[in-house]
Image 1 (cartoon, rainbow, N blue to C red):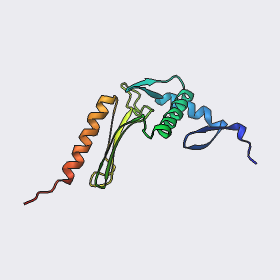
Image 2 (cartoon, rainbow, N blue to C red):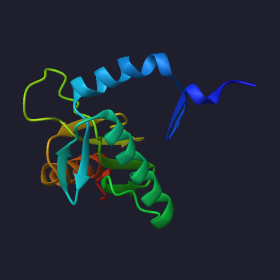
Image 3 (tube, rainbow, N blue to C red):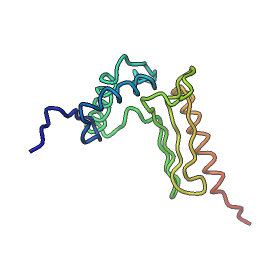
Amino acid sequence: MPDDDNILHFPHIERIEIEHVDALSKALNLLGCYRLIGHTPVRLESPIEWANAMAERFSLKRQHGVDPWRVDETFLRDVHVSTVFLGLNHNFRGADPPVLFETMVFGGKHDNYQERCSTWDEAEAMHAEAVELVRRGHLRVVK
């Protein structure tokens, strides 16, 4: 039987060996870990705080059926447009502002379309633009 005393458990991550925690922690600190307070991203001091925020997110999602980190979600026939708070800074250049929200299109002519931004308000506008892009791609001229 494996020794589970040396394993950390995170949502959706089955096993992280203790010897990898330092490297993971350093990488997450370099990126910058965030949580949402209302619609405002707040930088966290440690990856452990981020892991706790993720656990809280998934708990709320299970309890209420709503992901508190989802900005918006739209289904248009066979296309899914999704905008979410990422929780990790995706501005890999290290400059400000952090890039924390992502819109993606799954399916259809614009499959794998992706845009990222820094704020909730920008994310709402980005989602609306992606939905409009998909709708324009589905318009047919009827005579």
